Length: 316
Image (cartoon, rainbow, N blue to C red; front, top):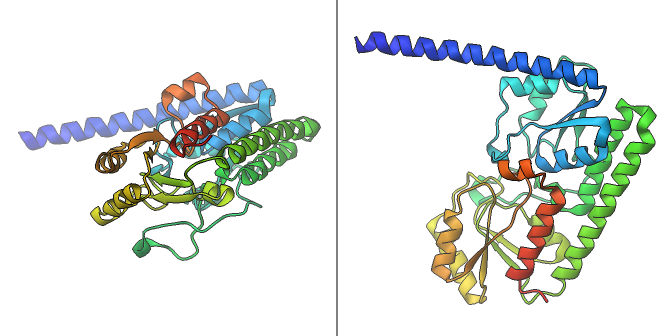
């Protein structure tokens, strides 16, 4: 009897999954027809920094969507079949590069839309080696958090602008101006970071998350230690945590920074052992649902980061 019930339940779940998939695909088709009617360039982006850049550069000439749902941790994100359909029906697909989205190149190979403009935003950027736990370190891996070097972010913005110019040559001057405006704001933010971080009592960031801020350490002369490697799946050992606690106590550090979109258990453990306080440091991979709905920008996130760095590093 139980076996028969189980079979019925499995059958119902399978039918619901098929129906759900058909409804989702139908909705994508309806949205695509509306988008085509709007005459705007359809852009699909993977990570939030790319979404923010494309929204600002495309402005009222483009409709931009974020592939990764708000609140999702990007290193573990895997696209669904409906996501692949969205990419295939877009005018432009923008991703960060093979080190951040290893799944993207396989999808691109299978795209049937020959008019799709694919933008590897990392093209032309200067990347630094990735940091992993020693035993897991892949040869030649590079740090994918390229948008945190603001010179790299400017190159990413220009790459997006060039794709839009290719798609709509008549608006070339418009897209170039918007990219210039965006990059001017990046220059201002970079100057604010440099000025603030040059006047700090401490230069040491203890980060209880995955290794995301290597570009800042290199650019602004900071010492940066993370509890995990580039992948947030890499769990630190008890020995790793003890080493961090000892370092905090030895160097009289008062703040431990924690990661966005993950449970701050590691940070709480380290801070508790070292009698330190917690501060958020957000690498801007993605937003929470609330932040996305409120229209929080890339610059909002990084400005908040700078304020927390100012507190945590005891800057004047």
